[in-house]
Image (cartoon, rainbow, N blue to C red):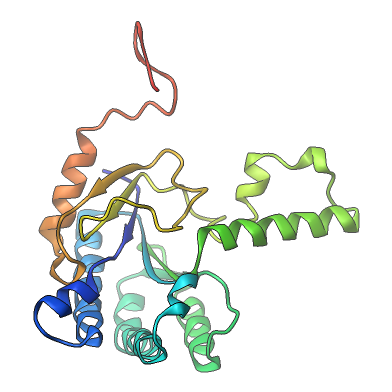
Length: 238
């Protein structure tokens, strides 16, 4: 089993459009798929689950849609936090806090505080998140330490840099799933997925369920992970 599964939840808008519904309806159904996925991952024993919910680029969408996405996050946290806490799931929210409404920040803080002692599983929501922006923030933080004299440039290595990222306490993803059939990373966990196995599923996110998750894991289990080393005598990765 992969220890850490990350998912790009894509296809809400197309799901709604194909049914003649507003995009907000697709996002609402997407939250139901999120709920199913968290439950299925827990039953499968996946230790870490990271979901891409709102990117820094999503601010370019119409204000009405952005507000609807914020409303769904509010509803999800208010409705599901008690259950996640009872089930021992630790919740983390990664991403920039800039431009996020104050009440959303308060909900984020509450979700993290209320579950910080849980050890039954780890749910990370990437909200107002962008991989490049995260890397820039990490570099700025390390640069400040150098300027303050608490760190030297020679002390900055891959481990030190990873420790400055939002995901510093998480293992790197073993498996990255993207729904909707689109074969791109979309600025998600750019540093962390260096050796993740990618599974692209031709299913829109609102239709995603435990069977799709199990299928992606089954595909992962057929892969030979070499991390740049020799797979067998006479054959080399890349």
